Length: 248
Ligand code: SAH
Image (tube, rainbow, N blue to C red; front, side, top):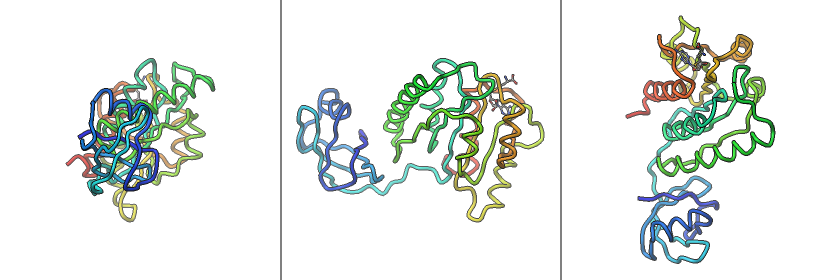
């Protein structure tokens, strides 16, 4: 069943507006009486039916709230070193499908791409749209936020996750599995949120690694092969969700 996000709090009657309203009426050609799922901006998912279709909005009436949860127990914030070209589009889309709660593009020392203020804001807007489409497609209960472009310093100063992991291509002692098991044991109630830092194509600089270490991030290996920037985050997220029991 199709799922739409609504920009208002839950109530018995709500309105879908903008591109989604057009999608319902013009592309899906839904009619009054047809059923769909809606997620209000206070996070409530409901089965609803179309009651009216206007030029720029679709009014829906909620039939019942749906208690099904699609969110993982461990909230992952993926901090991704800015990668080239369309790689970031791919990373954002896949990270949202897998279950990331938020994505932070990080301008790292070895990032080949440099984005200034206006360009960065435009890119973030684009990635947010990609996140929204992926959230709908994968039936997430939230739209993950793509945060503003930051430096490693800014990221570490503002991020409040209790577990922090940095995938470091030169790490040969600590595995991701060991780091996760240690965090699960040491935290009362286990891991609840996790900052996952992944480098760009050029890798993580020694200074960035040191900053991350000082902020409490554990450098981990993702195995014996070097993964590309657009692969590493997805592999690490899959492994984290597997290890924390979220992949079924
Ligand atoms: N240019 C670097 C590779 C960068 S890979 C080199 O040739 O060594 C991009 C990012 O993916 C890395 O910064 C790291 O965060 C992650 N990564 C890739 N393979 C990894 C591995 N085997 N272990 C840990 N992290 C890895």
